Every structure is written in C-alpha cells, then in structure tokens.
Length: 199
Ligand code: ITT
Image (tube, rainbow, N blue to C red; front, side, top):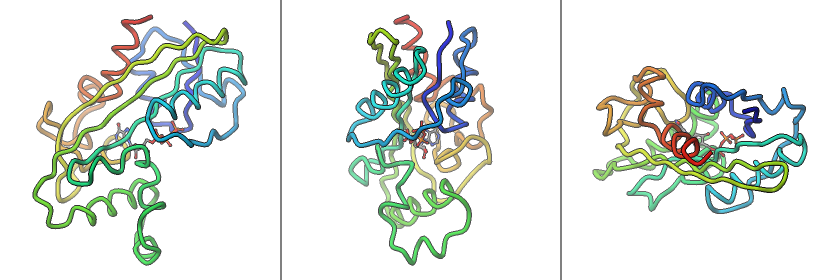
C-alpha cells in the first residue's frame, strides 16, 4: 500500500517507515506537498485530522498524519498538543535568550525548569493517527506509553523529549534506547500497530 506521511518531522517519518515495513511511505515533499498546515485544534486527533485531510486533498494519495506529545501529570497534562512549541509559546523571553541549541533542546530545558523541585514526575506520551483516503474515508488509531521525567538528560538517540523520558517498559530513557526498543513500546509504535489491525 502506498501512502504519504503528512508530517514535516523527519524523525516521525523515519519511525513510521521502520514500524510500517511493507508499506510504501512517501514523504510529503516526495508526494509534491510543501505546504504548512496550521494546528488550530485543541486535541491530538483534531490536529492529526487537519494535517491528513490537507495532504490527501493536495496529493490525491492516502495520507497518514501523526499528532503527538508529552503529557506531564504535575503540569495538568501540559505540554500536550503544544509539545513542539512549548518553550516558544510559554517560556519568558529572557529564558529563551539564555537557551542554547535548537527547538527540542529549548523545550527540554523549559520542561526541566517547570518541574524544578517537583516530586511527582509521572508522564506519558500520546499519539493520535488519522489516515485519510482520497475518497474521504478515515481510519483513526491511538497509542500511549508511560514513564517519568528525569532531572537530567540521558542518551542521545531519538528526538524531542526522549532523553528526559524514563520508560516504565524499558527502564531506560527513550534517548538511551535503540530504535527497535523504542518502537516496540512507544506511543507511535502502539498507535501504528493498532492502525495496521484496522486496515
Ligand atoms: P508535524 O506536525 O509536521 O507532524 P511536529 O513535530 O510539529 O511535526 P506535533 O505537532 O505532533 O509534530 O508535535 C509533536 C511534539 O511532541 C514533538 O515535536 C516532540 O516535542 C513531542 N514528541 C512526540 N513524539 C515524541 C517522541 O516519540 N519522542 C520525543 N518527543 C516526542
């Protein structure tokens, strides 16, 4: 089956390709889509649906979108749907100016700052998938994975919050885990397995 990954995140694309072996997964650019879809919804499913519909409409191919994020108990579920933009949206200007590194590094630094002195470090990742076919049919699936946020980074694999997320399943961070180890228990791995069952 041929489909387009409705994502601009190269790490997500790589994980989708590894987990959905046997599927022919084009990147959005390979399918001729260079647009940006504004994520205006307040739920993972809402945003995934926006991305998948836009790419299916533009390319005429089945489009698979992933909207995902980290939900931290002590922060009332934040950063949630704002995970990719956490520091940019909520950190004071002075904090951002003092941060080194890219987006992901700034988000991790801001998360550690928000959790300074906090004992309850429980958190989970959520992933919502929406596959939209050109005829308008839609298939949805979701996955979660549980763990806690460490006080410092461990490991350099993965992306986003991976070096801070100690997985309950692996007893190591996603930053320390090999790709196959993370994919076997991750929110994205579980959501993609559930999606496969429905196809
Ligand atoms: P697209 O919308 O183009 O797919 P994005 O990175 O903006 O790319 P999201 O809006 O779904 O995607 O935000 C997901 C963010 O949640 C991501 O940037 C990370 O900060 C975090 N995240 C999601 N899955 C993760 C994972 O497996 N490991 C670490 N962080 C993850």
